[in-house]
Image (cartoon, rainbow, N blue to C red; front, side):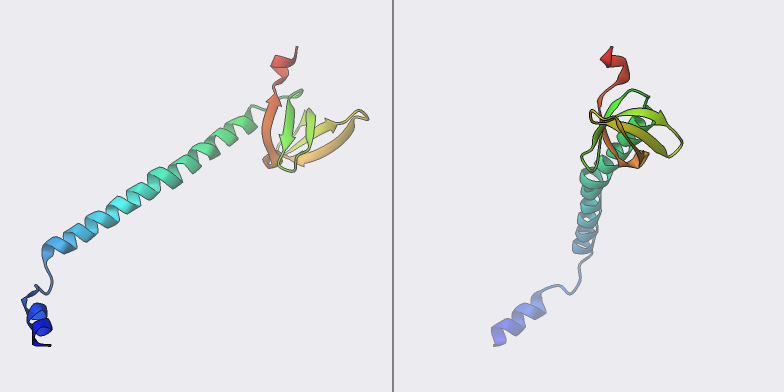
Length: 108
């Protein structure tokens, strides 16, 4: 029992070096989170916004719900697409577009 008390008394109570080391580790963890989580997410958002701004009539798209169609008209926040052989028209939000499969300029 006396051995444990002597070890506790010999240990320094609070050293400045360990506090600085802890702060450096916290800053390093924040930097790692930024470079591996937030930065790639912002890059993906920029790419999606660029894709939405580049939409043209005639592009073949896929929606987030899995609907495949061709754009027939574009308004501010909505896009009208034609699907299937019967040429059904569906009006969707621009934000519901997952990707552009075939650009109108590449078709012809």
